[in-house]
Image (tube, rainbow, N blue to C red; front, top):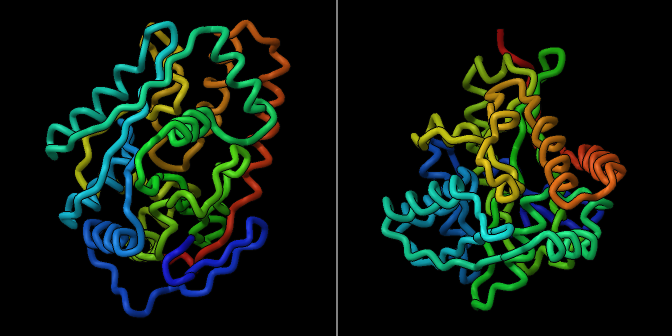
Length: 304
């Protein structure tokens, strides 16, 4: 489940057994990605589930920089023959740049089939996000022999009263869907290289310590020179106007954008499927409970 059992987790209690890694001195983001990719490759046959977002593309870059041959899969969602062209564009551009052969799994829905799918999966009564539930359905339909490599498991920088912390969530969003952690790998969780690099940057960058909250993954833009793009959340294939203006302004620091992401997505889904607005309240309440799953990985006093 986790390399060298640096974490043990019984789906309820999580114990950190090896952190920090005394044999690892963080240098660059690229080095941490390479080490993480090699740790995974040494244990399993990886299949990277790629999207147009920076999370999965940073994972892919780790395997590319390590010069490791892996399979890459893209899940293309469509609703009444419309698909999210923006996400597909960023995914295929990345593949062209790095000469990746991308395998596509199509998930096609109309109004009735999408309503039936979400109700069958009890989507409105669980905390699993929109993008995640479609990703997990794509994994279920995947017919290859590789172990899916996913991007869930982000570190959050936090500062409260000048005490800085690195927080991450207990893994397990896929459990509600019946996919156990043994049958997938969450890239950032697999070993401690990525988290330890993030902590290194947090401790050595006063500007990051000043912020009350920030997702560490935004360093992908500044440290890996990724092109900027809107934050997409998995429901955009329902919006055939391609207008995400109410959502896609990323709050780069002191992050409050998760509120907009959660609220906008569920509203679009309920509207498109002609469902009762009570489903909005159900979903938001369950996602609010998800915030209790954070674990403190490290903490230190902010430097002046």
